[in-house]
Amino acid sequence: MTEATNGNDVALRIRGLNAGFRMSDGYLPIIEDVSLEVRKGEVLGIIGESGSGKTVTGMAILHLLPENAETKWETFDFLDLDVTGMDEEAFRDLRGNRMAVVFQDPTGAFNPAKKVGWHFHQVFERTAVKSPDHAQRAKGWRDAAIDLMRDVGIAHGENVLGQYPHQLSGGMLQRALIALVLAFEPDLILADEPTTNLDNIVERQILNLFRDLQKRLDSAFVFITHDMTIAAALCDRIAVMYAGRIVELGKTKEIFDDPKHPYTQGLLATALALEEKSGERLQEIPGELPHPGNLPPGCVFAPRCPHVFKRCEAERPPLFHLPGREVRCLLYEDDDVAGR
Ligand SMILES: Nc1ncnc2c1ncn2[C@@H]1O[C@H](COP(=O)(O)OP(=O)(O)O)[C@@H](O)[C@H]1O
Ligand SMILES: [Mg+2]
Image 1: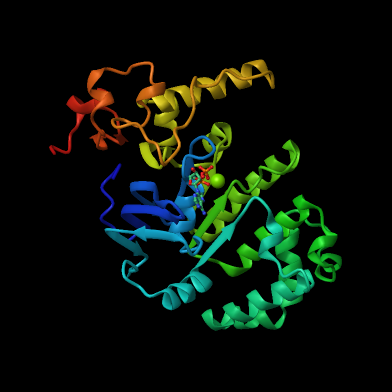
Image 2: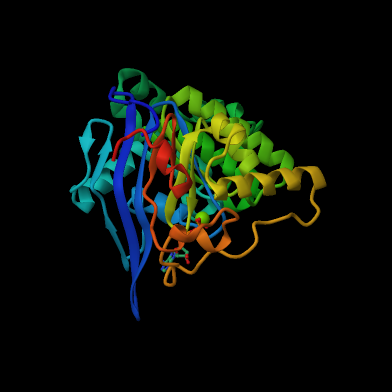
């Protein structure tokens, strides 16, 4: 990985994740050889164009892929647990107690037949066993819920407790969900494009909330977005995905200052052009993401790459380990310090 992290502060460590779907016409591989780790209190961003495999990666980690999915890992460590071969029921318990997920649309996280207050009550009851303080909090759960809602910018929490999820706006419901996550105190939070449906001002506010939440809980945080500006503002490290592979991984600032992979360079140029032209049609990387059933034989980015050379069209590049960076591109073969 990017830095030596042999300490106990690594919350999530995944090696060699492969995932795909059984389709009527055969197996469709999507994710290939994804390895990543997230420390406690750290935000790891997963970025890339729509269709690059960010959601499938996130859902694979949480074991939330549909029935027709197949996943394989070399290793999957979560806190001090080896989850690699854990059965689904045990994993479901683990997820229910230690992991939280926030999607673009918060409605799915709520039971539509129950009021918002019921959801807080459930979470406080479930966490009551953690400590005497938690037990105390569970007794006064209404006040605790109102406090948390105030923290996330819901002024009249006492009213919201008595409302049904559909009575709240999208932004309010997302805030309520974040307050619930705060109450839940998970060790891992995975957010998948959580602000994509919201207008800019609400988006800013919610992103600031995420940052505060993160600091407060000291959880490991995986933040999925296609938006480079958001990733830059929120994430400590970034994994750039393209066609189901991580093509670059490193510290956010270093990636933004000096992107190595031609795909990352293209994403950044696009983001910059978008900022400068403020909303005009952006200059995108020419070409399209390949269909996962029809990948090019060599580097998956070769057909769109401005630096392509002959070997790129025949060889699948491995991840090269540069100081503080991993890059899946033959241009960096000679810079590899891992000594493969
Ligand atoms: N249930 C599924 N069955 C078949 N293919 C799927 C399924 N879910 C996602 N995919 C495919 O996996 C690829 C990655 O999708 P996804 O992870 O959703 O991309 P992203 O989140 O980066 O936009 C896409 O080609 C998508 O069509
Ligand atoms: Mg997605």
